[in-house]
Length: 256
Image 1 (cartoon, rainbow, N blue to C red):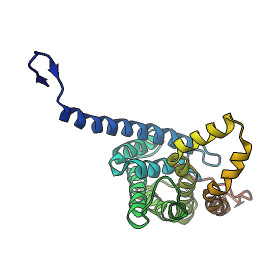
Image 2: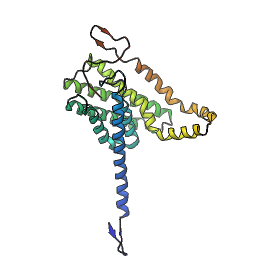
Image 3: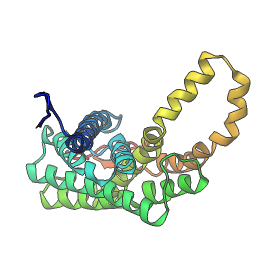
Image 4: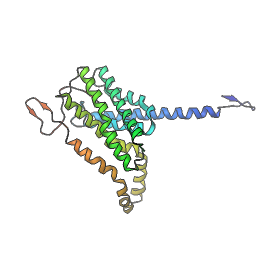
């Protein structure tokens, strides 16, 4: 604070410029924390989960989208929210810490791959961005979370599957589906709202159909992966037989 010639106090311009980025960072951390926590709670309520490994984990899409939009500095919000999602579950504290480490590392790893090797642009305006999001973001980066998560549960003596490989597949699938479904909406949320307002409020069906070919690429790229994922959920053995509906039912408890 500086006292000018008139005796009034004013804040230096340089100080105000430094305070603005700090405020933006705090707001972003708060938003990421709230979105991840809500998405994590939603993921634990997915059918065939029952508080166990979820075949759909929307929080992974929130985490990767946040890193792509706002950079690696949002990792504390992701880590804290990932830990709190599991803190209130019947899990050892060390298991919750390990799972939070895996989910955070997965988002950071995916963001690094997309930025470093694909020149990713969050607008998803290029087919290259869409394909890199599917391959690097949804296929490769969830390997980190699934591997660390399953290893953590094994080391903490938490059994939540009929076999480690089945648990790894479901964990990877949940992370991948979350990225495919949530991350695109997270990245283009503002543009999507503007698009819906401009077309539905004006009732311009012709314009909507006219813009459709340029906007359908994301859906056509993601739908085959989603379809494959739905049919790759391993069948669990419980008691005397196999579940015919392919649902995921575990013998213990765990979370993502």
